Length: 349
Ligand SMILES: [Ca+2]
Ligand SMILES: [Ca+2]
Image (tube, helix red, strand yellow):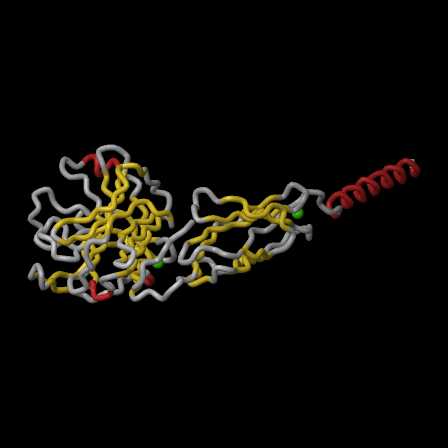
């Protein structure tokens, strides 16, 4: 009897020992890497050099050595793989394009099946020359006066109408909420004989449905000086006209007795998931006006006049004399990083 009690106690003791062993035994479950963080360049950094060392922080809870897949590109929807299974937390890239937004992310892998994808970071590279004017819409404001007077149209207007601030291409951006929304600027920043206007634009998700629902003109001014009014010499515009289907015609023009148009035709279907970089250049010495989309030359026409630098221009359409029976037609959507240069930049992918 005593022996059997001792035997039973012994069994219980062994079971308790095993149970406690189970509790304290180290877990065999692999933990994935922590989310990559602390990027360099910092997220939303501006004026980043075209040769740059990307770096980030990342550790594994188990102390596993990590490798990284680095994704990089200018199209946030379609980043390409820059380097696979990279075994350090930095990577040098060279010869980036000037004044271009790049997106990147890293995917950390611990070699045991643990995979953690980092967020998409973004930065914009330095400008090749200093712009004479810039509006970045940071801190939810515009970089202009509160009102402007047009000597040509003989009216004074508020400098903005129908806008809200939102996530931009880099940091804050501005949204044109209505067909008659605009932001007004002075053309005094314009070098008449040579220059560049560049900005980012993201269409609203319902752009095509909305413009198709309009009975009249489908419209789409991005930048404008005259709307539907009589044009002054040196007037200019940049547009992305919407047709009755899901297409845009990118067009820019300058006016001297008649318009010189650079047009693509209705050959573009735009995504509302990303920003497009749009640039317009003019050059008397080259004899061309040119239109670029995402650094690619998409249309050109002959230079016919110096641009006017004594009037006003608008993100959206010129709002003076809203007599046009079908109403005004700004292209609604988000705009960001407006810059004006005194030289005709060349853009290359
Ligand atoms: Ca691990
Ligand atoms: Ca911005």
